[in-house]
Image (tube, rainbow, N blue to C red; front, side, top):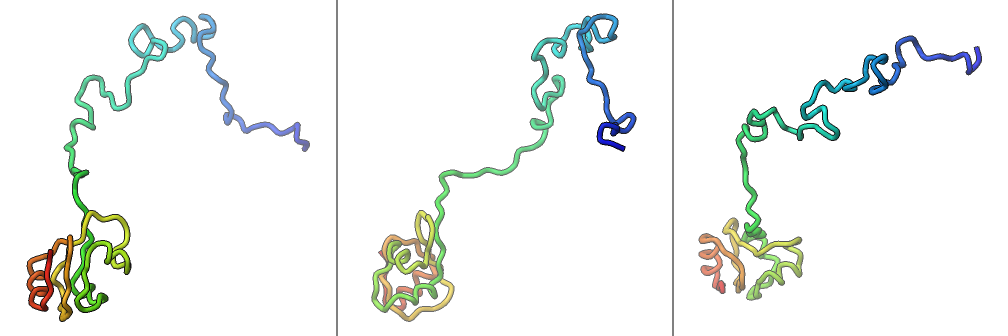
Length: 144
């Protein structure tokens, strides 16, 4: 057997449909498009999702969820994480970024009251929870 003797298996190769080649071909005149209508025209077809005037699926299904683009994203810290600072130090967003407690882009910082502290802190331009405020002020610190 030589390479020129090879042929594809019977029925594996199908002849291309040649439309619009006269009535003898069986696919002349309307070229398998039927008579008139949108799909008979050149470039004519319905848009994706069109269901013939019936309310389409993407409009029948309920829409869920909402993403607020104006929501602020605050870095959340606990009081115990502030123990890295020395007693009596001023803590603000820049100081927290400097020692890499917070990384990335945040709109602000909120400190929560989980844990205990004995050090005196002076907080500037940070949000503080009620319990954290009590603990910081009882240790002798202040919040601006």
